Amino acid sequence: MRKTLVKPEYTEISISRQCELLKVARSVVYYEPKPKPDDTIIANLIYDIWFKNPEFGVRRMTDKLRLDGFVKVYTLSYSSLICLLTLTV
Image (cartoon, rainbow, N blue to C red; front, side, top):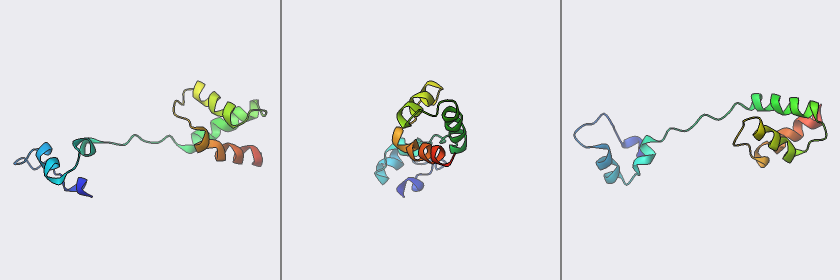
């Protein structure tokens, strides 16, 4: 990847110039990915919600997780986890 060729410690050429020469956006150099939430925490929350409300489906379960503070909970990404927990219990 060209991103790894940009060296911030190299002071003779600025980072913006290095990015320009390598045709890399500066935002790529400064980007730091956010850590993903641990699936075991979410799995335990899903189990607790399901234990109290076994009639909840995938959509109501994700709505409840959003209300509990998990802002970016997507129905499709956790539907298999929800189905797995509800089928095995």
